[in-house]
Length: 289
Image (tube, rainbow, N blue to C red; front, top):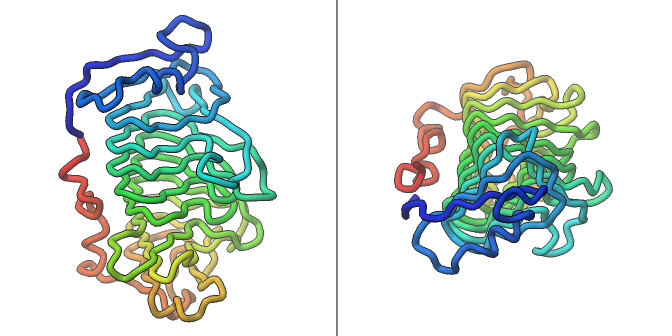
């Protein structure tokens, strides 16, 4: 990502850093600075809502287990998520993002609407609509995402690299609900070398189309028995069977068998999978460090 690091701030709840809250540290970053800012967050549970509205900010924790950002709120507006990333060139490392609202309504842990955002070794935990990958190009490496249904959703363009997706649904919840509003949009989610687990057997589907041109690919990934044999659902919109792009390439595990998948999903060849399985899918060779 562009720019040199000129700002280094430390957040410590006990007052032994530059700021006691993460939002105070973000607010202290100079507006429109061309340099990057690294905000080190010392271990602790930070009960606050955060908006990242300045570019070139990195939030880094000691470990996802030790550094937790949490809130408890139903998703009702753009102000509801625990963390909202609206600026470009954002990085998060070794943090847990959590929304503890429960399983009665949608509750977003993180909303990502800025371009060129990257998450390394982070955890995202809620139930419905955990991670709103909303707009822009995003990269997730070695992350853990947990939820009951539609827990990775939105209309972003994202690559999930060696991530662990865990479904807590017992009634057929969906791992993904990618939006895809038009054929011309270059959006969608690609999962490469990932692991899919869940609490039961055949209790989760891989995805359902929030929008007519929903696009999701799973490649080279392990699928446990928690994945339903049919794989995908059209959300009661049969017309979307013709426009959604749902593909699988060389996955393995009990839940990966394709012989009982819905007829309108795709078992991809190497050539068909190739555009989705490298960082070029998100133009990452241009902006990922």
